[in-house]
Image 1 (cartoon, helix red, strand yellow):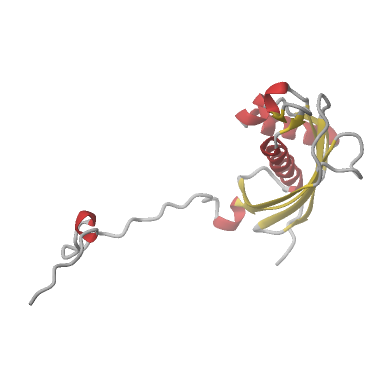
Image 2 (tube, helix red, strand yellow; image 1 turned 90 degrees about the vertical axis):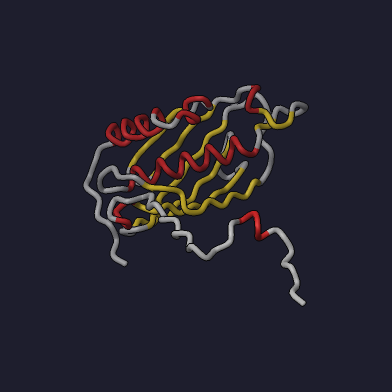
Length: 181
């Protein structure tokens, strides 16, 4: 597979691109995600702690789904910063290891790096943390399908097979067959 080539952009271009990406994703806005840093292949996003995102009311730890959403979003942002030009892409696989619960009443940071970009797939790794990326809340690895791998058709519709005239309707499939004597 050949590697995709990317033109040079400056830091403000990446930051602006990521802000546009976040503004197009309603749940990113709802969760209050903010771009902290964006350069070629790498992004850091901050998500402020809020009570409505808490998964453990005794400790204030955020719900695992909130951390998962943050990692998926920052990994997608890293892909966007690695592409030669903006194009559609979709998460193919996302694997997350939740290392420990977050501490209550503290913001979460998440950084991701697109470490390999091919003509069809982008490979990304990320980490969610509060103070130190070396003491992570969660690690994630993801792969994304690029629109260029399908000639711009990210979603292909599948044609339903035509019903054959001799096929029995579904209602009759649930009945036991009658035995002939």
